[in-house]
Amino acid sequence: IEHPVSQALMQAQGLAWPGEEASGGDDGVGLRLGASVTHPLTGAKLPLFAAPYVLDGYGEGAVMGVPAHDERDAAFAACNQLAVVEVIDAETGKLKNSGALDGLDATDSGRKGAIAALAAAGAGQAASTLRLRDWLVSRQRAWGAPIPMVHCKSCGPVPVPVEELPVLHETRHEETNCPSCGAPGAIRDLDTLDTFVDSSWYFLRFCDARNSSEPFSREAVDKWMGSNGVDLYIGGIEHAILHLLYSRFITRFLHSRNKVSCKEPFDVLLTQGMVLGETAKCTETGRYLKSEEWERQSNGELTRLDGKVPPIKVVWEKMSKSKFNGVDPMAIIGEHGADVIRLAILFSAPPDLDLEWDQAAVSGQRRFLSRMESHTRRVSELVAGAGASDELEGRHLAQRLHATIDEVTDLVFKRRSLNVAIARLMELSNVLGKSQCANAALQREALEALLIMLAPFAPHTAEQLWHELGTADGEPMSVHSQPWPLADKALASDLGSLHIVVQVGGKKRATIELPLVSSDTQGIVLPSEQDIAAAAREHQDVQRALGGRPVRREIVVLPKPDSARPHCLVNLVPGKL
Image 1 (cartoon, rainbow, N blue to C red):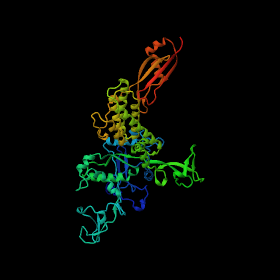
Image 2: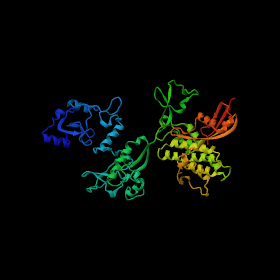
Image 3: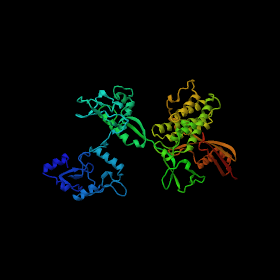
Image 4: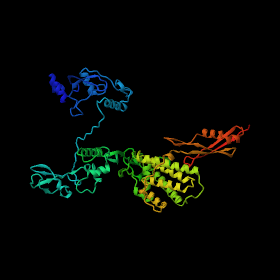
């Protein structure tokens, strides 16, 4: 009603609003303004109304009515005899009666299509609306950053002058002179600032932590954060609303004052999941039970050790002292080391999902690091050039090495799938342990790359093994100062082949190499038994050995899934002519 366009049209045509008694909060009341607007996509002429339920401060103060899909618009259309046109199919959720947008999903492709069409017509563009209505920054706490305000009986609240900042915590209860009128007896504000006030810009201070003259300089912030902000924000789901909202508010304010180059404080958000513990509860009272109050029988049945009848149930909940479901990390670290528990947590689930704590995962990662220790001892004792060279073994090890580097790099730095990255390192460790490659330099290259990629997950173990392995020039610098390994794309994409030994009647007659293929979901895929047997039968040496006899039986022995280099045996049992 108060919109300038409404007021201008009402004045030009001598229209008057019916009055408060007519509106009375009724969404159906409206005033036809005697003008029309053009639909930006269809070109249709639409009547223009003033209505009390359209807020002047919301957006541009004008909305397009959709009476078929909004209750207030429906009431308004009914009161003013307006046509009701459905534009979303209730059964399919697809757009209809929408011209070129018909058939698109209303919440995804349809929304994007409408924005693109408006942009192409010069009638609109995508925009984000940010609103922070109220932020109560004061807290009635004895600790925290003092609020730099002084309360004067004459002047009221007066800010502390910049040259008197910061206000020391121990001086909050002392009387002072008013910074404005100089009168004595002024009282400092006794409240403290919400901790969010500090944590909403600490990342800016980190860029210039030793600056004693100002919170930070723009040059230092631009050097570290550039125009995109912090590369990666990792926090719990409870930070996804308030802390992020306040940080964005303060950063955008500073950007509007030309204090920083970045509009947004963080480029990528990763909310980590919780570690859940096995939790026992009484089904009747809901009381949590201590571990010494219950046990699981060999048949899986749960029983209470205090002899009480009320049954119990076991659920997975966030670890808490009050739920008696926590695990003492110091006990595990004391037994296995910090690297093992770190690997167990990261390996058990993607970082953004909750994980159910499993003690077996600790044992598995302990075995993995033990294998890495064995690899280091073995490779460090290899003599360059010792042993007969096996070109196939070396090619396979090189391929698996560079394929792992390529995939782990993507998993860690782009997809953040740390659990899958650890799995790929474990697979490469198995390949290295079973490889028959006699090329000492290649084995060392593979182990060095493996240790560098392991370092972010198991920093202590990787550092120790790196020094035990030594370097070619005798200077074992820290593994953490090494550059991240680069993948040879050509080697990484060379999947190699399946080595097949073909026997006829138990005697070796031929060797065949069948190319391997890769699948996005299954990794390296072996040829089927039927394809392997067919290739064996068609080989000319096998045909010569069969001498025209039919094959009575085919025996195909496939390689193990974790074979360092896949070998396969085919035995063709010939029949009689």
